[in-house]
View 1 (cartoon, rainbow, N blue to C red):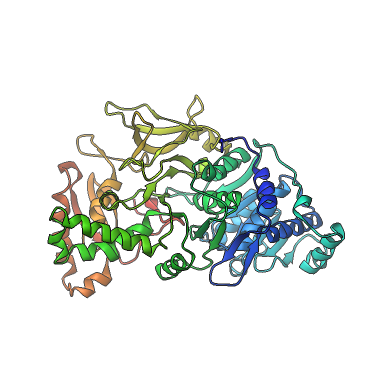
View 2 (view 1 turned 180 degrees about the vertical axis):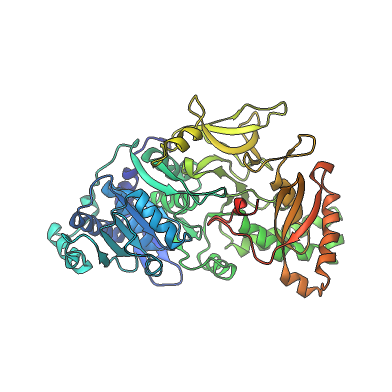
Length: 553
């Protein structure tokens, strides 16, 4: 297909429901709950009637919070196709954070998981008039005295729906009000790793362009199977697992519980997804827990040094990994955070079909991507066809902040003119906050965050993420964080207690002092770690598993 980044966002849903009427759309994995595209379209009509009963108007904000589920998807689609603005809230936010978001966004209606609503103070919901359960779309609470809760019941909505379509509801009856693509469609409150959340205003053009890319790149097709475990309230999972697959006519299986490895592997084995989207954490855990221990033990640790023999071993490992993820996927796309270079190099070595993309909530989210067959190692893909990227104020080595332009870029931050102004250069390029380089082919190489870069004793640029990659590859290290105190680098370490116990390591401090010296042998003088500080708990993280660095500086 020819790529048209100006296709109307609402139009995508209207076309898909009509074209894929009898195909399965969403399934809550582990249950019998499946909605065909016809079922989704029917629920959307009923929820539109609910909005009318509540007095919801075009451009009103509708908030949505809960774990991934078929009903979560329905509520999202119903809001967008009504002309309202969806406010997807990450379910990991605290009750206080959610209340702040509801007030700040001026949301008029709230779709919520029942367990999440229990965390909220219903006197602190701002302008919310009605609260609706994601379990069954029944109203939970009505705060507007002019609205009769009985008129919002599913039974009453079904009666009104039947009256509206006495001959039955069919694909030909679908007709949504298309909003201009420059208008606000989605209001996303970022998790952020450096402070308080901001509300990103994404217009229809940004959402449509991202949703269409799966078809344009020939990685999403009608009938495709996706296992969705990334939070849909986050831009990455939402754009491709949900919106892109919906537009393509695919079948999305939603992990409705905590996506622990046992559940994910079961889902991969049963569903055999045709495309997998993930964050680095998943593939890195598999490498450290299942692959690396085998490679470090005899006889594999010396067999892999023999040319020819090592190729056979690598082929076997690749085959086992592909089967572990269902065996039928075209590509494993990694995004949301940087991947450990050593682990990335290993997966390239065994020819595992993976690629690394780059984006941010402010671009809904895609900036760069490249098919795994032509992916350039250590990059995060090539700048998308309809986007522009360049390095702002590069140094002598070509390193500087990555800035971008194009239809994916946000309108700004809601109710925050200062933050919006600071997010763009004077000539209109969006600042990503990432330091990097771009080669002649448009491949982007990220070195670190502008805000996390440290200065060495002689003014050297130090990227803590690169040092952490070294530390995270040490045995007995679960995760690490490098901070600077009194111009000295300290490594905060979360020990791998399971492995320490398994190998009967009793003098833990002595072991980690030995590891610190081992790490320093791999680092230049200005990046030497002067001490390790062992942490009793895992680092606090955002919903996409980025460490909240600002808590530890």
